[in-house]
Image (tube, rainbow, N blue to C red):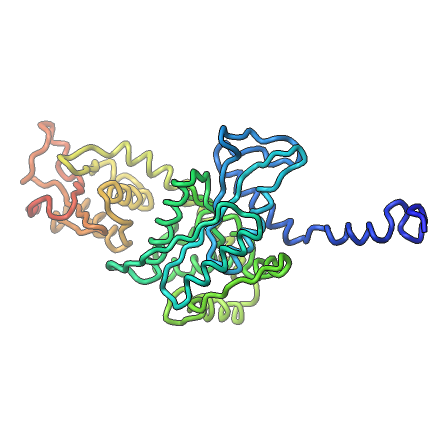
Amino acid sequence: MSPEDPDTGGRTGSRDMRRLRKRRLHPLAGTARNQVRAALELLPDQPDLGPVSGAASEPDGPPLLLVACSGGPDSLALAAVAAFFGRLRRDGTRAYRVGAVVVDHGLQDGSGAVAERAAGQLRQLGLAPVQVRRVQVRASGMGPEAAARTARYAALEEAAAELGAVAVLLGHTLDDQAEQVLLGLGRGSGTRSLAGMPARRGIFLRPFLGLRRADTEELCRVEGLEPWHDPTNADPAFLRSRVRSQVLPFLEEQLGPGVAHALWRSARILRADADYLDSLARTEYARLRCPAGGGIELDRAGLAELPAAMRHRVIALATAEMGGENPSYERLLAAEALLKRQGSAGPVQLAGKVSVYRRSRGHPVPQDGRGYGNLVFRTTGRQAGNPDD
């Protein structure tokens, strides 16, 4: 039968048509590629991602992307999608090289075998280099989840520095973002906490924040991948696991479907608000800040004139510059109360071994006297007791 025969599909022929259908891109894979492409656009000086035009290669080749992969469906699906951006294009160039890092926390029996199995699937996808990094998780005053996260990010940053990667891709999804917002709401930590995880923080990118967890599982099925399912994700001993397996399903049942999307949408709105307020706060902080003999001093009059939302952020910035952590709302209120010149002049203990007190008459100030009442930030133990006004 001739290829021209209309019974075979005209010029193409039935066999060629079947081949074309087989090559047809799954719609979800196309969506996921667009998500990764949008995330890569957040990088400075990222190469042209068009299908034809060449990339401006670095002297030693295209820039390197690393996928942080646990072997679970989210990160394994991300690796499969990211591999597309490392393929040869029509002009024989690559936009990126794509590798991966598997972090073995060593917290479960058989974790080494799980890590090696994940690494094997990553190599089959064409990723290179693929490294397995084993870490030691030390609690040192923090919970097991936080300790594991600290060790994991340290290993990823180390790998990126050693290999010269321009970005590390993380597989967090819309569901992870919804859980993060609920956790922030439970802590009562304010706008920044409710803003959830950013799409980019330093070298870390989260391309899949707009995809559901079910989407990544489907992508793995389409790609013929066999993800590992972490049993701790369903362990009620962990707060995040309870939010995932109990709280979110309960909210969906009681409030109707769409709760996860609503939380994700709220996070995007709140992040824009928080970014704007933080930029204003940094300007005010630079205006009100002055050195104070190894500490930081904030002008009382200028601080008192600020709206509460801005005042709290400025106090938090001073705490951070002294090496402290973000103060709780209660600690911020206690620090703010020092401005009223009523009661104790401090010190008020803030998070991370930082304290703040009001400069009183018992402490030297410049000859013009403008320093009286200013807030002074010190690392804990560096200043003596402070008499009241």
